[in-house]
Length: 501
Image (cartoon, rainbow, N blue to C red; front, side, top):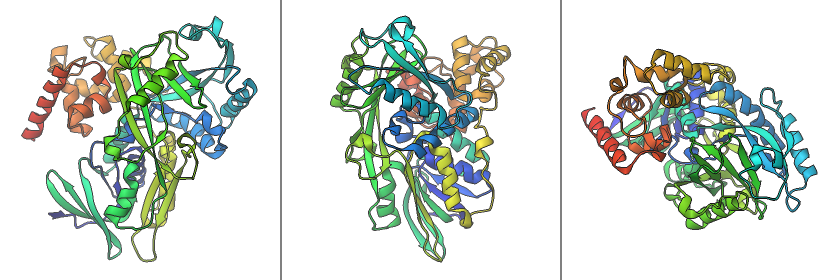
């Protein structure tokens, strides 16, 4: 067992969006930070979202005006921070007589346009589906529709880029490292961890429990706190099917049971449909979309689209467990998406901050609020992330076409689609993957689609990737385009790299 003799200012359990966001913010304020993630970054809830940066239109019905306002403000801040992995998206909302009335939708959308100080995103408009391309894929029926703005995000890459920026600011990021035990000793946290390389002990002045669905397990099993955590686990599932439409807008549908469903353009050739909401009581590590959830999403889509959606059309499904603050709501879909920060700081003892709930859109503000709660225990420094960019995001919001053009200008042998994918994943850092290559062969072996050895090596060296799943489903979504034999070849290569390290 090894021991770090120098205490960290802040130790974080959990490598999801909240944990990595807090690590980045704290490291940028000069704190000495260490983060532990038991699996891969974004390995659970943070890679199983609907891929949206949004205010949450439906939360207005629940009276969650503060949450919606904060999220609406964050949309444009995050878009400016990471224009390579976040982009504006227009949503089509058909209106039918048996669902929410038009006046209610108009009121909600008016608030949505104005509550958060929208600046650059286009405003809401009403239009006739019969005269608009958005109506072509839909069944005959509703003619009135509304269109409003939110943003799409590559959720897993958002997490990884926060971790990368934290590391470049001095944070120690340890993936595949499980915290076994944490106890207060002599005014510090003594934290025992286990990893493939053996156990270690570190000390920290402050401990943050950002373990997502495992936040209660950390409190009871690792920290040894007996109080019951106010957490409600809610499962949300999604399906991916071949593209149901060819335009670049998304849909928000009102289901007959009062819930909503999204249908979103996904990875060029596919449509993402989600989500479900139901309480979950099993192991979060084993969550998966069940047959009844898949059938529910297929039925919800088939109610609206001309082309029926059946379970046999599903090319991928994924599911995550949202660790929501338990506010006593009856239905899972009504449970608050707001976050709660629980600070346990007895006099003279090391503080523990536990994070309950939250959503990807508000992760940056959650991190600021967390550090505000801990400011007396950490180096004094002002908030800074609102005006920052994430790695690769240092270009203008509308600059993606120019960025792709520059990349192709530097490497004219790069296929247009390949250049666009690299720019959309790595932004201005895409050139680092190309290195000194002067032809496609210089990027090395191709593992399927356009995934080259040069990109794989970069992901292993810089972004903590270790397995084919890390690369094909979190660092990218190329898993949709590679064959099982290619996955096996990639895993074998990664095993050789790990053995040689």
